[in-house]
Length: 247
Image 1 (cartoon, one colour):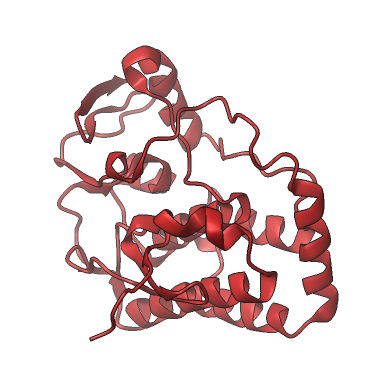
Image 2: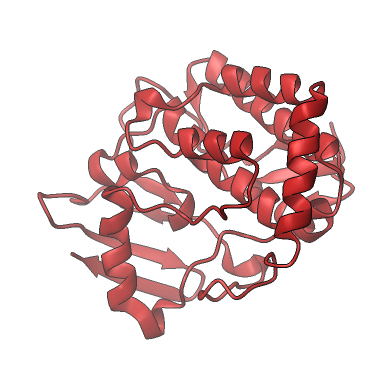
């Protein structure tokens, strides 16, 4: 059994942001490789996020919390996860596929780039905004990617977030891309130069509250009606917060 001496990826995002890009790419490749193994057995993780990725160094990681694995042919028994990592088609159709895991992987790429967890608002104050944002996600809203981000990296994130699941890259394709980048001095140079430009803006206020690790807990959402035309009805829970979303 592997020992996660460094804790979760989420707990180490700030430190990892300071490492060189070859190590960051290797870390991402480890995650994509584990995802490829899961998908090769016709399984879907369903709850991929940086809290479910454990590190035994800042260069090596593996996916954990496999209790929600389902086969690609299984009918979902509800939605389980953390809102920002949940792919739009899951909200719309209760449909989990390999591609919905890839959407979550794109969020992890964003976190490693920015050195902080995916942010979301405290909805006790901004409930109406959250309600609107769920609909926006289904309509194509994604986290901002700064213009100074290396083009190759930004493009791969965007491909993982494609609104059409079938157009997202597979875990195997991502593994191959990341392996190539680690041996491409032009790409590594582009990523390093991008980091220097982004350094001054990485700590800027995103306009959202970032909670400690205990706030980012996955929640089960029963199989009610999630999407009807322009309306979403469900209950989303995060720690002590419970929100009724009706758009």
